[in-house]
Length: 363
Ligand SMILES: [Mn+2]
Image 1 (cartoon, rainbow, N blue to C red):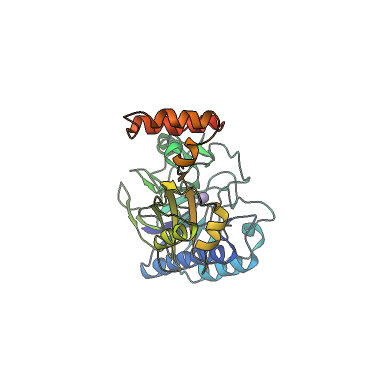
Image 2 (image 1 turned 90 degrees about the horizontal axis):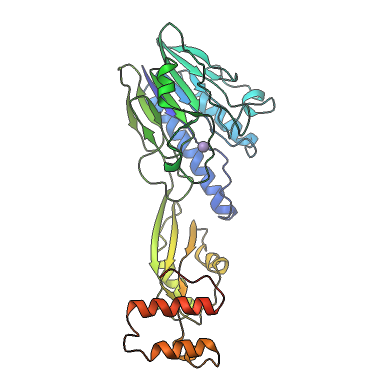
């Protein structure tokens, strides 16, 4: 008994702040990754496709995407079981409730577990009915007697939140022990975007990268539910790659040199995104804000984000001539034999920050 398991596809995600053209390409990437997942399920002749929530984003999903979903799922000869999560929670106006889904698709709409039998295995699914505040879905649950029981739901394994993406809320918290106590041999889960696998559960992770910092294998998994410890294989379907690069801009004397240096670090190709961490000393003459820099770096609709960690370089010559406490402070330090030492340089930077009324940088 083999299933293709997916979660956290996030069709129609917003990708705010990347510009209209790039965010549209990213959404197309999500669709392509989903389509490839369905291709994979067809090729692998799996017994079922399971989806553990966040298939789409309720407040943003478009009719066009709904039609796309319907057409893709109808390509499958096998059952498709969907357990709605927090982003695609079940409600009367939801796509799940209002759309005519293909016959092979079952959307678990109840807020209690119900079972579907597939190839001699019972798959128990459950729906979130609200976008937040869903309690522990496993509490008091017993799978009962019968064929092997597998759980399919969207939830947060307790103790794993700190390892997951910042800003994630604790939706439907549960523990691995609870899965066992409830009589489930395995959990096909969703919610955590960072993939996770134990002997008793799997979080496949989002198939298409959604934010920077998502490295490693993620996306659909082929799960063989027959062995006592089910086996899990990750398959890559992503279209975009997102990289992070650090660029030291010390030595760039003017804004064009700065832009050129950063452009060199932007990878070629429309499906490669990069987050540039800008470090080093920014020449004193450069007065270029992040917005203006991004405008230039995103020419040709490239997928670029910036983290500005560069500090303005100190113009010691003019600082030492300042007719105030700053000038006195700088002249005092410059007179020292150990002026070039890291400690004095750090004291210089911290002192100037303090004299400007800023929080001193860390020594
Ligand atoms: Mn999600």
